[in-house]
Image 1 (cartoon, helix red, strand yellow):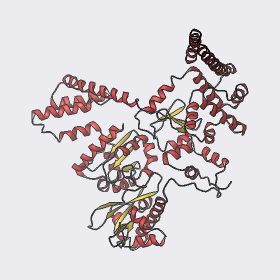
Image 2 (cartoon, rainbow, N blue to C red):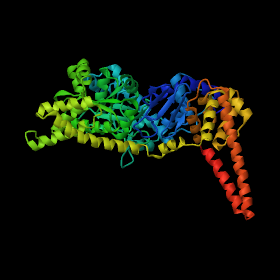
Image 3 (cartoon, helix red, strand yellow):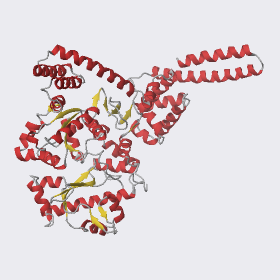
Image 4 (cartoon, rainbow, N blue to C red):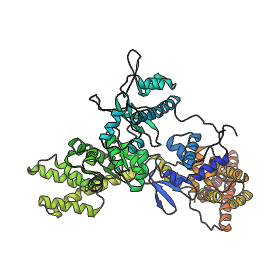
Length: 602
C-alpha cells in the first residue's frame, strides 16, 4: 500500500517494543500489583497517578485522563507524527519499514529540519578536524592535557572549529544550506555588511544533544584568551537550555540503574566524571537549575547528588539547585569537594577511585549541607545570631518526615550548643505543626484541578452506566463475551459513547482481530473515545467471570432501556394530560417518572 505502513508492520513494531520498557525510558515506574505506576509526564503531579499495564500494553493517567499504547505514547511525549513514532520504534527494535512507506508531515518545521541536518554535518566535521587534521591539533592537545582519552573524545564527539572567519559558512553553503537560516539558528553570524562569519571560530566544541542523541546546539570554549570563555548556540525551536540537561541521552539508562543522578555544572565536569566511571552524570547548560529540569529528573529518579564547585559561588549554586530539586520532590544529597576545587580538577588531582569513594559515595545529606550553608550568615559568638541560627535549623528539620532523622539532627544541635533536646523538640514541634498544615493545604489544592474533579465525579455514575462500562471491559478482553452481547442486545447500550465503542468493537472482531486493546485503539480516531476505551480497559475484571454474571449485566442494561422507554411513554401521557387540562393526573404521572428516575440513579 503506497505511502502507508502495512498493518502487519505496525503490529510487528508495536509487539517488539514492550510498553513498560519504552515508557520506563521517560518515567520512573514502580510495580504495584499487576501494573506499574509513576509520575505522569503530561501534567504536573507529586503523587503517581500514571498507570502502565504490561499485560494489555496500554497506559492511562487517572489524573489528566490521557491514555493509549506504545505508539501513541511516543507520539505524545515526543510530539511526533505517526510515521515519526513508527520510525523511532522500528529503529529501536531493528525493524525496517517498507520502502513504500513515506513520511507524513514532520513535527518539526522545514527550517528546523534543515538546521538539525546542519548540526549533524558540523558535529562530524568538527570532530574529524580535532582528531585527524593539523588544524585541530591545538584542540586535541587541550583535551589531552585535561586527561581526556581518545575513546572519550570519540564518545562525546568533541571537536574543534578552525580559527577562520568563513570556514564553516563555506562548508555549509557547499552542502546546500541557506545562510539566512543558518544565521537565524546561530550557527554562523551575519555582519552588518551582510557578510557571514563563523560563530565558534578557534574554539573546542561540545555537541549538545537532546535525549534522543541528536545534536541540537553547540557549546564552544575558547582555548586562547578570547571572550567569552564559553559560548552556546542561541535558543531556538530545537534548543531550549532550561529544559535540557547535558549528556542526558547517554546518562539516562545509568540513572535508572543506579537509582540516582549526579548533577554537575559544566561540560568538562560531566565528561571527566563519565570517563572516571560516574556514568549517571548530567549538567545544566550554563544556567541555574530550572524547575523544568528538576521535574524531568524527578520523572526518572528519586535521588539527585549535586556535585558543584567547592568555592563560594558553587556553594550558593548548590543551595539554589537543592531548593529547586526539593520543591520537585527529589531527595537531595551533596557531594563535598575540598579546597574549593571543581570536579574535573579533583579527578585529575586525586584520581577516579578517590572521586568515587571520597566524593560521590561520601555525599552528605541536605540537612548537613544546610547546617554548613546557613552558618555562614550568622556570627555565632553573638547570642542573638546564635538563637536565629538555631531557629532556622529547627524550621528546616521540622520539614523532615522521618522522626529518627529529626531526632538525630536535634541531638547534634543539642550537643553543639548545650541546649536540652526536650527544649529543641518543643520549639521544633511548633514548626512541624505549621509544616503539616501547609502540607495538608497543598494536598487539598492538588486535587482541586479540573482533571481530578472529573475523575472523582466518574465514581458517582448511575449504576446502569457502571454496568455498561464493566461489561465493555469484559468485551475488550474476550471475543466470546462480545459475540454473546452482540447477539443479545447489539448496540442497544444506553450511553451514546458506549454505543460507539461497542460498534467499533463488533467491526474489529468481525475483521478477525484478536482481543487486544492496544491494537483495538488504533482503529479509533477520536482521542476522547480512545481515552475512554483505555480507562474502561483498566477496570478490574474477574478472570473466571460466569455466564450468569454476564447475563446479569445484559439484563441490567435491558431493564434500563425498558425504564427509559417507560419514562418516554409517561412523559407523552403527562403532556397529553396537561393539554386536556387535567393537572391531578399530570402530577400523578410526574410522581411515577420521579420514582423510576430515583430507582435508575440508585
